[in-house]
Length: 130
Image (cartoon, rainbow, N blue to C red; front, side, top):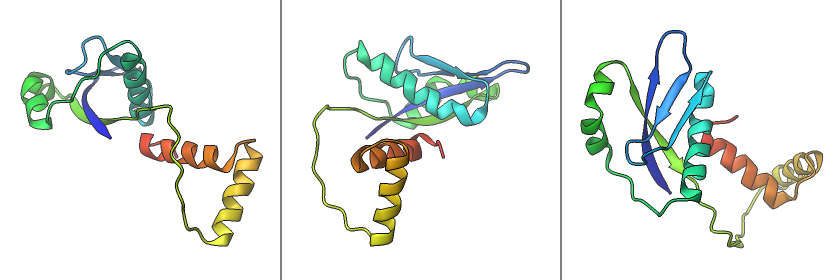
């Protein structure tokens, strides 16, 4: 998984603004701090729908490029790029029977398959949604 570094700004009486120094035109915003990361992940997904693959720069290079923003109170956020290759991978997991039953019950409540439920749970954990 690749991580792109975003610059997060927050001025008084405004939303959190998020921009990606390595991805011109890729930006996001959030009213609440807990929504910054999920919104940034979504912005990455949307940006790459129409763009060529780009490798992120190391954090020290990004930090140097945005040092003036950082000096004014902005901060860096590592945002995971969750790619969907549209290729399914079959995996074998060993789980306690009680845990498997709990997963199946939770999946059924959400009208999801076990696999879809586990993928959704993993994505939410990676994006910081609990």
